[in-house]
Length: 420
Image 1 (cartoon, rainbow, N blue to C red):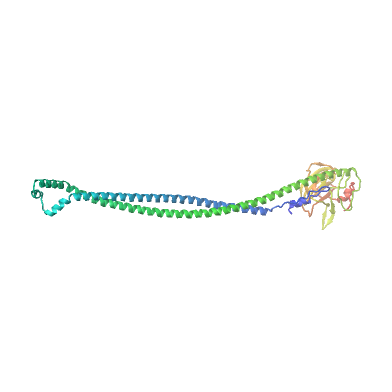
Image 2 (cartoon, rainbow, N blue to C red):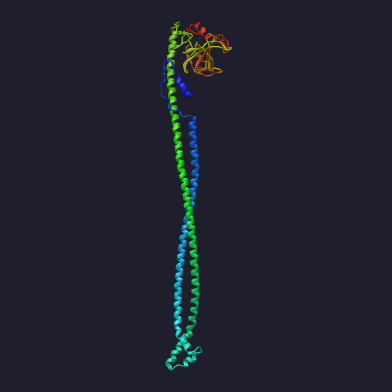
């Protein structure tokens, strides 16, 4: 039971009762602090892994771009290889055409070459003409010799050019094809490496993303747990507030009833309200003096263990009303060493009455009070072993010292009390 719960449980007034409502669970500060720490730790871990996820995502984007570029380069290399192959095929066709032209040229001089071989290598143009059988053959041989003279050199030059062109074109086509094949292989390897890096980074990203998802769940669970504890604490605090309000209402009602009873008792001065060694119910009083509170005498005035107990202790629950014993001026209120809180009232008769260990004070120094006025409530402050009012009387008017036994002093003034 917390201190506040104990106070609420002890706030029992004569003639009034606080409704008994079961207190909801009140999580301890340690529980709430622990839940807060768990949430903070989970949030920090989520933040850390979120940074890793962001880094992995950025790296995945980078290698993805690289893989895409490698794929594009590979496609370009493939296209270049196809173009080189097409160029080689065109060169081959051109070479074939050149070879056909050379073959045609060679065919044109074949007859002359054969005739020259058959007639001897030293056959001259004049001998060829003179060897003719007649005018017709002479004319034919003259035409053939003119044709050979005009075209032999060109045909042989074309043949040489075609052979050189064939060699150059074949070499260029072979070189281009080899270069493009090497470029395609390099591009294929680069693409494979980029694809492997992309797959590895995708796996790394998925791993940290999975970790973040798990941590997000842990953070959510920690947040829910903290909210549950905070909600329970809020419910408990609401219950405390309701109990305090009910207790305050009960005290107000009890105070009103007590004031009415005190006024009635004062009007019926002289009526004996003594009850053995203490008081209960309405405090005994006469017109000018009243007993300070309701309760029973738990400790009397007198010396003990070498020290003076300079008043009487009236045991009563915390919150029990305390009344001014006589009319006068509040000489002092507030903290008092040993009493916790105390009130000192200088009566119109010059005596000072002291009220110690009070829980709350309702009047202040300099304020005038009258006999039977509510001035405070019983408490358990200062050097106290239980809730009670310590009441003293100083007939000399001194705030400290000169105490007398309050009980005979009250009886001498018409307050019919017994005991001590």
